[in-house]
Image (cartoon, rainbow, N blue to C red; front, side, top):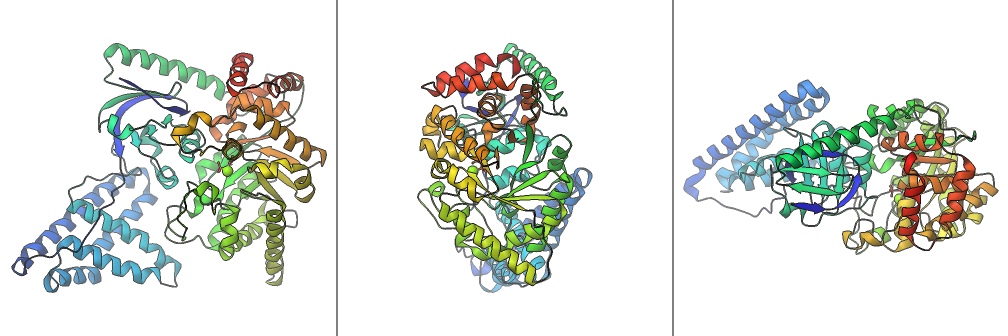
Amino acid sequence: MTFKGNPVSPGIAAGPVFLYTPFKPQLEENLIPENAVEENIKKYEDLREKAKAELDAIRAKLEVEDPEKAKIFAAHNDILFDDAMDEEIRDAITYDYYSPEWAIHTTYEKFIRILSKAKDEIIRERVADLRDVRSRLVRIWYNVPEKNLSTLEKPVVVVAYDLFPSDTATLDRSKVLAIVTEIGGPTSHSAIIARSYEIPAVLGLQDAMTLLKDDEEVIVDAVLGDIITEADQATLAEYAAKREAYLVKAADTKKYKDVVAITKDGVRINVEQNIASADAMELEGATCTDGVGLFRSEFLYMGRETLPTEEEQVELYKKVLIAYGDRPVILRTMDIGGDKKLDCMEMPKEENPFLGLRALRLSFANLPIFKTQLRAAFRASVNGNLWIMFPMVGSMNDVHRVKSIVEEVKAELKAEGLAYSEEVKIGVMVEVPTIAVIADIVAKEVDFCSIGTNDLTQYSTAVDRMNPNVAGYYQTFHPALFRLIGHVIKSFNAEGKSVGVCGEMGGNPLTAAVLMGLGMRTLSMGIASVAGIKKLVTNITIPELEALANKVVNMATASEIEEYLKKELAELI
Ligand code: PEP
Ligand code: MG
């Protein structure tokens, strides 16, 4: 059988399916008969031993592969045998006749509540560990096998309804052969992370969780978007050969990774990197890129129960700035909302989160958190070449308001005698059509802009970028987008202000070619796209790119444009 989805991160893989459903039990008060106390205490002790056995196995494995992660599981073992909690659980079974899982749930809940209120940050952080251990115990009680993406047993094809950014951020890259999800398009965050990890991914395969079975062998062709089940020997061999050919082509492209991006007629293009953390692996991109065009700082807030402190953020930003020396690092302030939710912050439930209290709007509504981030950024700025930009700016009111908050933060730091660089540039993301249309006015007020084409496409075409039902309407090649972007580039170039692109259009050679033809000289992308873009740049001239752009802005449909670009650039991609 062959199923079709959206290929969003190229590659070909084959392996067993791992159906990923995060465990979420619905617990209710459950009482035991008064004469069954002893038996249930024994059940609780057995449960704890089983949890210990799981933790020991994970720890033993991680001690070899990742000793830092192993420490987390050692701490979980301590929680499991914590005297105070143990006593409360036993009491709840003995005197209140609670069943073991209900006794565990209520006791852990009580400790979680107490720790959440602690003043000490380190104690508060233990809450996430308590939740984790509780979930392990309850899961074992219900006989549900362990599933998460950071401790996979063997290489697998991960199949899920959707992956949260926190799932993708913690997944064990060495064990994930491919990703298949039911929802999500090419610019969803699962897609962006899959590309940056170079994991083949096909998203938007409806009913994937029922069509595919756990442990079933599948082929994932993330070049065409095919998922093949029940493959015979001939098909397996065909795909092995296809994979080989794909890897050879990818290896050829990779040769361009370290070259300087200069067109055949001598024009320098800045090729920058999009990052989501200060991890050593991400910062390796500093060896082959001209800066960080987008630091998605919101990932620092994800997958945790408490907000990152100012000090913690200063250290992280400093690490990135130092890695890049005098090259620019564009920090995008937290872009929470839309498909990015937090455990460490209350968020309203909304009908249309992508049109709701998202990004800068959420920052305005949570000023202390926003200001902490800005303070940390400015304090780190003395270590390099920091630019700060704001997501989802929609009007000049937003621009004025955010600039005045920046001034307040600077004044506070000055009053406290804390150093910051006076050279920090302040800019906006152009991802809401209203701000794109008035780019000529915006360009006079800010130091730079970066075009977020993922959202600019979403908001211009009126298509939710996560919704597979309307994925066909999300037209990256829509001629209106090229015209709109052309206007932004022209406006900023006219003011002598820097303009870049950090959405997925910047890393796709077909669209990047048009943007360069429209005057764009700075492209930022996931690390996996750097070599392909440099290959294009070094084999083409500006007049050739201008001719392409000229043609494209006068075409009527997205499909016509895409076909034309594929044909014209066939040799260079
Ligand atoms: C964009 O919208 O193009 C962008 C770069 O931001 P994000 O994908 O993080 O929303
Ligand atoms: Mg965006």
